[in-house]
Length: 625
Image (cartoon, rainbow, N blue to C red):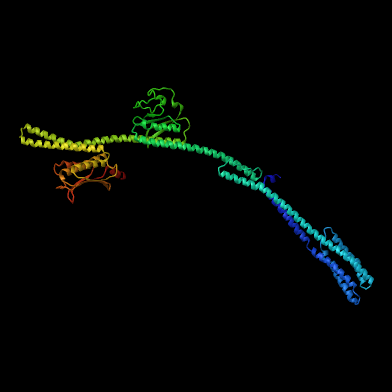
């Protein structure tokens, strides 16, 4: 009984086997009874014909003896048929004619009565004696009654078979119906309802309602499945709660990291634009990251490549002012409890003591180590926080490296500016002063030799012209350096020069500038500007022009400068003797490895054309080679 109680499949299979067995038994009984009933109708017909032949014999015996032969033949014929019917296989070859054997005994009695009693009476009645005939007829009447009883027994036996078959079918139908009702009830109770609960449970789980439980209390397969589903729902509820808590934790961590990235991003702007004052640019960012990531204190040290020493330049929540501090009013590094004293400690407690674990991150750019970032922490640092700190060290490395490069570039720029000024003074004003010094020495010799005043006046004129030239060159140099230093970039300096000479010439000078930014060096900027000013000065003094134009373009990796006018033009493209302006322009072009040409324009006027390859472009070409 335990398999039936604990297994729905076993119960269903058992019910199906019982119902099938009953159906098979009913069909088998029907087939068996039908098989046993074969010939019953023939036996009843044969038994019924015995009554007919008995009546025919009685009738033949009662005929008038007018023709004795015909009468005897008729009696013999009917008697033979009766004997054949009585011995018919339909009656004699059957196993049993009735369930209780009464019909078989009656048939045997009929055979004996026919052979012992009726046949002799018929034989005597053939002679035509009326008394024998009457006795034969009376015997036949009693024999017919016995045949009627035999037929009745056969009919009752056949009716018993039909009744038994009917009752058997009814009982089988009733039992099958009861079994079907039991099966349907069991299926509804232990299959359909549990399935509905399981479907409802799955739907609730799909709606994330893990508190719902399937009410399945059976011990069969669906009961076990329901218990498993309930356990799964409980485990899913626990897992979902854990996942929700982890997601909330991750979300909070992501928000904190996004905020940290925003702080690093905003701090990067201050780092890149705050000069070399890391106290004012990096300290606020580091303090915000400490409060956000629950770390600290943070110490920033720079590495000195000359003696391989590390100097601490910034420390958040420090208890004392660093010895290198340049601003005594700054309190960015001090703890709040130490900010009143500014210089001395108020408490012996140290925040570093509360964070015995330290994380040291190198601040590197490539293979160059710029310093170290030391971070204190009390709880373990997660991988994501470590990545943020690596990002922070990278930002600090970039800012420090850029600041160092900017300082080096500023120093180089200052050296270049001084070199340019020295060269300009040497190429222009120094040569003029040397010429004046020689003229003064000549004048002294002439005075010592008492040379006539007329000859001395010629030297005095040369001195006057030299002084004027030197003064003009000094003004040009001052204008050039003021333009190059006051305005950012060559384009602004050229525009100011064009505006200046437009006002002096009395008409606007056409200006065109098509050069990529940051293409030229400071030395090239000064030479281009000086050549342009010298050419416009010649246009102002000698061209008598009504139009002038300045064009600077970059084509085919070369820079092209053109200063043109519609004036009187040049007598020759060669530099006139002792014309210092054109000589200085050629000398400036040679300093930048350029080609300077002077040509007359086809439509009138002159043009000064400079073509050279910028230094940066030459470096690109050399790198490709």
